[in-house]
Amino acid sequence: MFFWLLLCLSAGFASAADFDESMPLDQYQWIGSHNSYKRALPDTAYQFLRLQSVHKANQLNYSHLSLDEQLSLGLRQLEIDVVNDPNGNQYQHVELASRFNEDWLSVHEAAQLAKPGFKVMHIPHVDVMTHCITLKACLKELTVWSDSHPEHFPIVIMMNAKETQPDFLNSKKPTPFDEAAFASLDEAIQNSLQDRLVSPDDIRGNAHSLQRVITNKGWPSVNDLRGKFIFLFDGNDSQRERYTQGQNNLKGRAMFASFEPGHPSAAIMIRNNPIEQQQDIRQLVESGYLVRTRADANLSASHEQKALQRDAAFRSGAQMISTDFYPQSPQAKRSNYSVHFEQGRLIRTNPISD
Image (cartoon, rainbow, N blue to C red):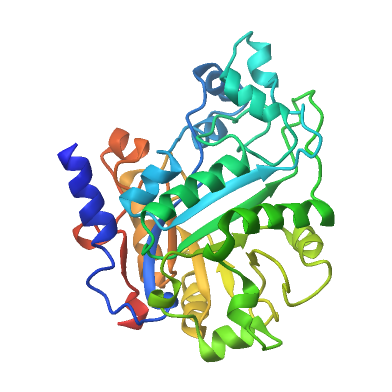
């Protein structure tokens, strides 16, 4: 217990305390996690997937601490995947579990999945074990933690809208996200976060272009954003078109979205390969954008290979660096390899701004 408290203090709460808190948000780097809600695959699922593809099965062989535990460690970027289940009764019977005559879900989880609403999972009917089975539960966990730590460094939540599932399944395919579904998703976020949410409108103000505000005026200071959340929608072209309803300014939306540089709503970018996209990331950061990248992607890579990508991510200046190997994560404990800055920190001044 003492070690856990010491780690939280050194890696999380103390990590931003030495910095000039009047600096803009983009002048920091912070560690986050990938598919942050995920619990481990049941062994039968893992063995079944290995028969399909050893590599793909290994890529799914990871898990995380609960969201509030990750936040208490000091992580300040999390990722949540949602499926659209407006009518309910689509996910409480997990097809892969049924094939093996197993019950993967608790009675409470199955009951929650039977209700209408957004559900949280990685792969429908396959990789479904999560720390918070519904979006409502995940958002509640975030807000409860935030209420207990009201001066926390701003937290970025990346959202993915899942619309596909493996072809080997017989279950009904996920319901697509239409404009009404995205409006409901925004409403769920806004109702849960309330004044903790920093929206595109908040940053843009009275200007016509969010991109111009970001590249000319810049981001607010950490002082002004303490206790706040920023949501980033990581969607494909079709999903972004549906989310913005053909508009260019994200007016009224709860989430930022990853547009290309120069787009009127461009503010936060996703560039997941810091080795191949090193210069691109650096140029984006120098222009004032926030960028999310990954310190690791191949779970089968050697420590040396992972370290190359980690170091490239650190050098790139990308503010948000996502990993499956943050300190105390199941992967870090299993492999004796972890991703953090100097002295175990999970937040530091951005080297590009030094």
